[in-house]
Image (cartoon, rainbow, N blue to C red; front, side, top):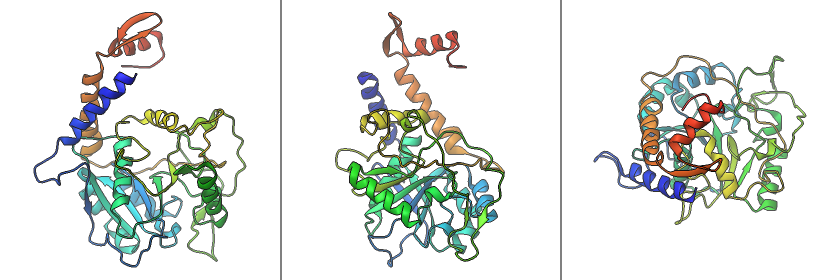
Amino acid sequence: MQEVLKNRINICKELAKKRKQSDQVGWFSFIRGSRSHEPSLKSDNVPVIVISGGSAKKLAAELSKDYSLAWHPMNLRNEPLYLLVHSLDYDSYASALNEMIWQFRNMHLIGWNGGAMAGFGAARAAALAFADTLPYRPKRILMVDQDVVQTEDTRHASPTVQNAIKRAHKETKKTVIGFGVGYPTRGELPKYPFKKSTSDPGTGYLIPREIPTFGKDDFNSPTQQFVSIEAPFRSKMNDGIYPAYMVGGGEDMLMGMQLELTQQDRNITLLEAKILKKELKGEVDTPNAYWNEARVEALRQLFEGEKDTLVTFDNESMSLDELMSYFVKQGWIKSH
């Protein structure tokens, strides 16, 4: 597997070099809106970075409907919000969200470009690279998935939650702390209505407090979806805590093991709360060049570079390509 990893990194380096002549030379380059610089911000501000893709129309509908998303500008108490999308998606997001961006002065649209690199790891690495470019040098940032819902147990403006996050950073000595346990599932919100606070409009819509029960398997969840990250966000040796070469959705589990976040069957960087995610409904963005073309091409090149790697499984030598076909034959995965 070390050979697989070494090969993967080399392929990703080559993908990162593939860029148009007009692109800025370097690992990441960014498109910034006209209001991306706010001189009034200081290092104690905690910017929120939301990674999105192919959902411009859905987000426009969601943000104008209510305040249920955790990162809705109304829920941030004037902290800066940066919606980070791939440069291929930038124009469609700028068009769909133009009204929201001008309505909320703390909302900014940022486009990222990493050559031909794509995927979850690259997007998160881009978010940390962008955080490093902010002129007010924040000591801490929040990184939130686009479909995370505001709940009382994970409300980042809550003094109780803020203190728990800061305490966890200090006690674990980890630069990343998750606001709760995340799950891959998303769907309809609970049937009971949102409780809208009339005395505090900044609070928005909150789901009533739940007291979830967790098993040890829940705390093997990776630290993502809704996290607090302390500076320094990157070093000369790496792109930060989320390796860019982890392209697929399930590969962030490896990140947790590499960082030794899991100790005694538990991810020590997760707070004991449940992160809720909602299904974003609405019209699909077309064309969706990043997700349907750039991402697929990156995966294809990884497959071509990795498929002939030899492994031993069930005392038989075979390639990774053959191993996946074997998994299909055994009924362990649906298709290869």
